[in-house]
Length: 329
Image (tube, rainbow, N blue to C red; front, side, top):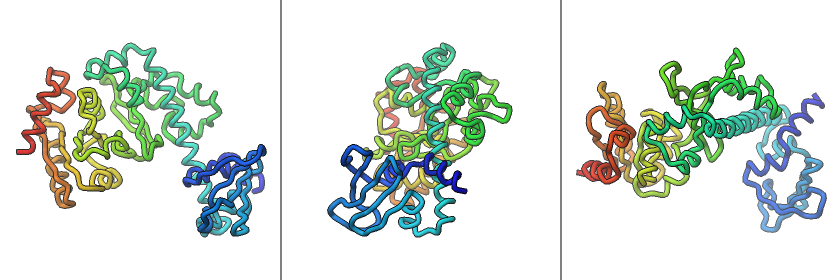
């Protein structure tokens, strides 16, 4: 038990945990000590000290002190064993986020060396190198992710738990362009978009995260919502930076709350596909948003098109702007 506790505290240092809880501090002295306002009681003058080297805290205001587990007991009002369970969950989430971040960075590096992936991006109308970096697009050529992450010190069971590596030990996103799915600026999943017909598009297990680019998009009084990441990419490239994407027509509860968190106008530019599923989803979402007081308009694309194919086949920003204006009528 004692050894396990120490390993847990090493994986999730006290100061890192406090920073995740938005605790801010300034360094004092030269011994890895920091001071800030106490999270355990109201105060206006900082009296809460953390020694990062010893992994301990002490507040001169309320007189409370101890290690990470003691802090969780006090701040979350949990028993010792409940605190351990809570921290083990927090640690697992932190480990998963770290390995997903490393995998995403690795895939971005691989993209530069894979002409087949660049050709596919060109075919989908995405050619702006700055935009590709901004969207953190990568590529999974296969055969090297497991070796790279093991060399970084990540255990194989973590790679399999996150879904990055399948039970056979192979790269689960092989021969796919890879897009990070973020929540609160933290990567929570990866989406693999196949560049051929041999493999299906897929997510790793877990949440889709926030609406894509929401931190920058949410500031606009009007928002364009599209189905796919390539729809978003060509619209951003054409200057429609108030576009966001939910990776499909189904919004998660968190994504829906984001879209309806304040008064705004929402333009739904879903696929006009042969089976009508895109427009049926747009109609259902229109009714739902209007019931929440959100002004909503459906953008009617030419038959058989989505925003990506509209631009790939010769459409331009002026023509798409006309479709937005027609949606108002």
